[in-house]
Length: 219
Image (cartoon, rainbow, N blue to C red; front, side, top):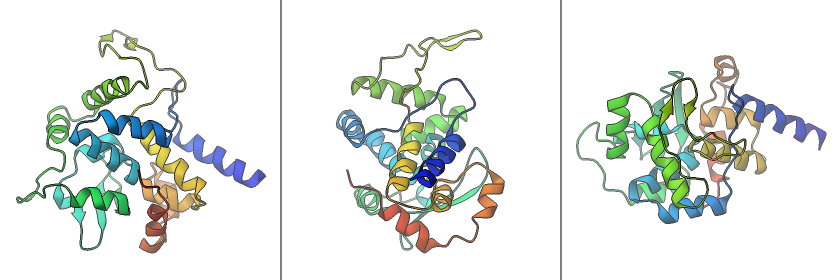
């Protein structure tokens, strides 16, 4: 028990942002509430976020070229760290992907509207604002004004238990740890920021990652 608690504490520390606020994981019920009010593209973004553990900017930038459906893999390069990441496609996500209209041109984005925004602005702030509105629509947070004030950031201050798209990353980590997936496998799957940590786990094979995504629940 003590070892498990230390492991969880270590994992939480590595994923904590260097700020006075933090984000908590979603519950499954909360994710279902978001999916219930989301339009098709946001529903897809949420599913990709949960089943890959990737940041919103990485998911928004995905094209069909990033998907190798014959090998059931998503391959991408992190926009934050430039780390190359391979994520096996979990069964629920594969079912969703198979329902999407496949792009017939090289470089066709999977999520066209999000891709346009991330390409235009180079960061995910605008998309994050849209997701905050979606959370408000689902009754999971107050609606933000999205206005900025000099030196103070967004008008509406985040609370210590606020939800955001990044919370899906925490949710994936939490679910995987609850399923007993070793910390090293979890870190490799979601593309941990630490270069030293990533290098330490380069021996991990596809089989370990496939077992990890198989542990994620269907919604």
